[in-house]
Image (cartoon, rainbow, N blue to C red; front, side, top):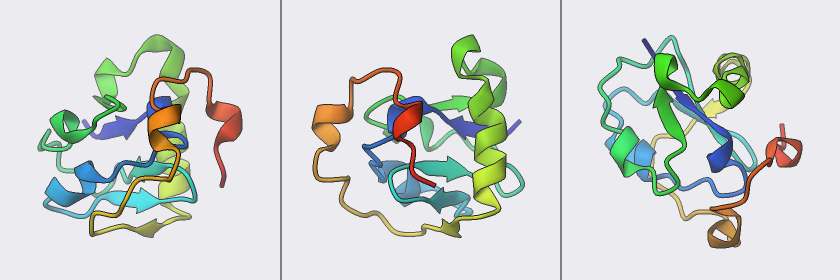
Amino acid sequence: MPYVVTESCIKCKYTDCVDVCPVDCFREGPNFLVIDPDECIDCTLCVPECPVEAIFAEDDVPAAQKHFTALNAELAKLWKPIVERKDPLPDADEWAKAKDKLDKLER
C-alpha cells in the first residue's frame, strides 16, 4: 500500500519527507511533491516528518482527498525525482493551514 501526498503540501513543499525516504520515491513539481506508488516501499518514515500532515497511507487518505491517490500516480510519471532536502517555498508557512488549494497546484 503506497503512501499519498495530499492537498496540504500544495504551495508549501516542505521536503523533510524526502530526507528520510530510503528509496527516493518522491517527485517534485513546481509547488507540490508526490509519491511514486511504484517506488514506495511503505516504510512509513515520511509520515511523521511532514510538518503539514499531508502524507497518508493509501487506505487512510481522507474521503475528500481520495483523488490525490490518482493524482500522485499521474504526476509521478511526469515529474523528476527529488533526492535531497530543499528549503520550503518562501510563503510556505502562510499556506500551511490553508484549505481547498487544489486550484493552486502547478503542473
